[in-house]
Every structure is written in structure tokens, then in C-alpha cells.
Length: 168
Image 1 (cartoon, rainbow, N blue to C red):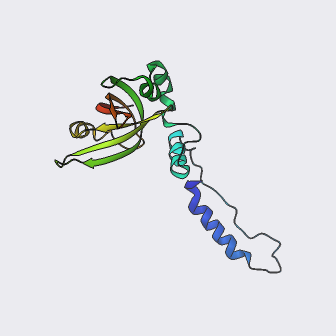
Image 2: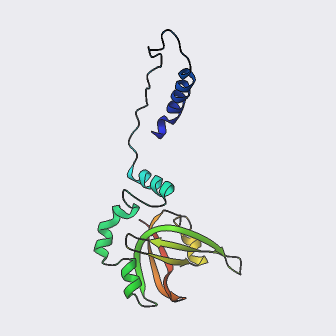
Image 3: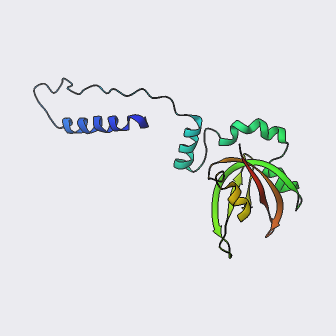
């Protein structure tokens, strides 16, 4: 439908402008028929992006659904890590970057806080300057990633200190 938006708007404009005209032949339709362009169906990723943008949540699926089997074989997810993980433990976990908040340190270097989500839970992860500079091209909102990180306890909440990042 988006690919045909111009055609639909033009058709509507013509319909409205011709709608007020009455004549002897007003019972006969003089409107040109509406012909829409053939377009390929939207991909699953496009639909999910539209849902997130318009509704603020995913309805028809989740971007990580394609990796669900990998998550099952891991026998570990963010919920399990938050419930059972020990401070200082090194974990490897996959997720989606829901938020990315860049910060400038006192020494003027860039670091970032990311909100990593999987189908089960979410967790905050800290990416220090050295790691951020190495993986900056991968760290984007809505990107599916796997991280190797150390579990940290900060302000009574478990978080991750990211050491390595890989695009899924």
C-alpha cells in the first residue's frame, strides 16, 4: 500500500473534486478505474520495524525469533542470568539493542549504555571506551547481537560490562 500512496492520494483528490459536479449524466461514472502497482509483500523485518515505530511494540513476532533455536540451545537467557548469575561471572548472551545511550567520560572519551533485550527479559549493559571504539559499527539500535560480558552488580541491579560484540 505504501508503494501506491501517491496513486491513492491522486485518485482521492480527483474523486473529491468531481464529487460536487451534477449533470444530466451524473448517474454514469466518469472516474478512471484505480490501478495499483504490483509490489512484493513486505518482509518480516519491515513489518516488525513498522510495528515498533507505530505501536511501540512488536505484534506479529520479534526480531530475535529467527534466532530462537540458538537461544534454546544456549540454555541461558537474560532472565536466567539476572536470577542466577554471580557477580564477576563471564556470560555469552544474545539480544536486541533496544536503546543505545552514548556518554562522554570525564577524560573526553565516548562510552555507551545499552538496553539489551531478548524474548524473556532485558538488562542494561555498559560499553567502555576501548570496547566501544572496537565495536562501534555493530552497536546500533534494533541490531541483533551476541555479547561476551562480565556480570556486575550496580545500585542493587545486575548489569553487564561488555567485552566483545558479534552481530547475529
